Image 1 (cartoon, rainbow, N blue to C red):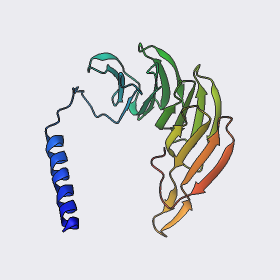
Image 2 (cartoon, rainbow, N blue to C red; image 1 turned 180 degrees about the vertical axis):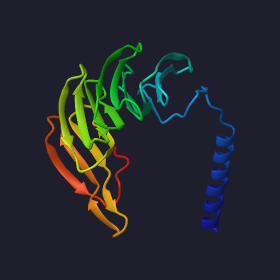
Image 3 (cartoon, one colour; image 1 turned 90 degrees about the vertical axis):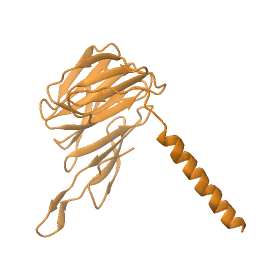
Length: 212
């Protein structure tokens, strides 16, 4: 009997959660003319950035503070913890990394050799990392100086950086022979330090599309 009572309580709790969730309404929504491919929010929830046909920057109340039209689709966006700096990466157009300040001023942009599929920024906005379909991982400082780049075996799908900017993780695509069903180049996870030293890499059995 105790086990049945516990099971019944769990079911009732789940039904209650579902009922509550069903009644939840969004704080706000904003219609744009194209798809939203990436979103990010500052640590305190005061600022929200979205990427698609351009970069859009909102406050917590849903007011559009500014927007910026890039030369390509925005595949990835990130924001520093305090909301002072916003980074975006584009593809199907100019294949660039962009850095903005909170007011929407473009601080710099950098053209890579392929789609910029993933970007990340350290908590204080001092370091920006990008992964590109030119097979490279890039690390920049806040001023837009390229500190280093590392050529992987194939397209870089995903990147992230620790809050203090000391370590960078990247995940890459592989190259597969679909006829012989073999990997020509194995996908990998990479770990770098801030100076660009490869600390280790690990071969996986499938494309690494996300890292954290």
